[in-house]
Image (cartoon, rainbow, N blue to C red):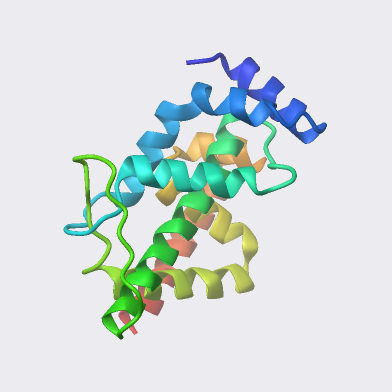
Length: 185
């Protein structure tokens, strides 16, 4: 695993236009990305989306971006967590479309296969609630992405978002309450 300074240096090089910086960065954060992927997929039962496939899909998504925002390892992981959430939700949408007669899509790359199929409706409802939350307060959704999807601590989230720890605590409490109310109703 590379030093945090090396990750920051490669992020800065990428932002400055070094197209190979991302390829040098990913091996340094690969274990972190797999941890995020396991967290994203935790609790899902049957299906065909696994941690390796999710990490690779996120890499492809990030490679398509001209500039990946990120000033630090934590900030990069927050961006990756957001991309992972988008990949999981897109996968759930495809699974729902297949149930309605759409084309079947399979991704199987390793034995750590977990499901999205049975939770597809819940994931889509959560994604819609997160979208609405982001419209109300974009900072709240960033806190949710860091805390829930990236698994960052309050202090790490504060650092990634340039906020105080107390602000992160308040936002996290507020976002969870709002999301629970939306999903319960």
